[in-house]
Image (cartoon, helix red, strand yellow):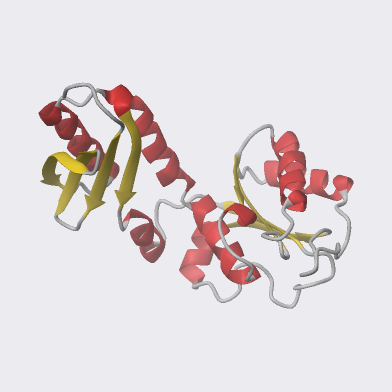
Length: 221
């Protein structure tokens, strides 16, 4: 491909075939169709490799790769390839009547649930604190997660899309005790509704292997 503007790649993973298309300046540069593989990621890599070879794309020009796939949906429907995830809700005395993962299907909950904590923190809708963060409590949570051998952590907080500092600080404190780990923060994922936002955050944490696999594949390519 001759020098030019940024290249965007789109990948659509279907039940039979995986399609990949490269676009630049609003025009299609090249497209390929490859068989979808059982682990999905391999099929995506095959398609991207063929696309780059066919179009002679300068990889340095690729600024975005967008993937549409049922990979995540299938993982949750089948309750497979999921990572046990610790759920930490910052809520003080509020929202405790409906704890995290309420009404999840039993098989899915078993596959996903690591440990669950409801601790101090959170805000009212107008930004007032429900309760202050408790550093000692959060460090204790971090140690408990580490003792459980869990490396994926989902953090949610009441009204965090309005004020996210409690989630950010909680993640920092827990990460220090874990010495690393993969963190999903609800204020980065969903809107005001706590349960929907929290569920989406847990799902992202549980799918960490899939996300990491795709990120690693993109980086290697």
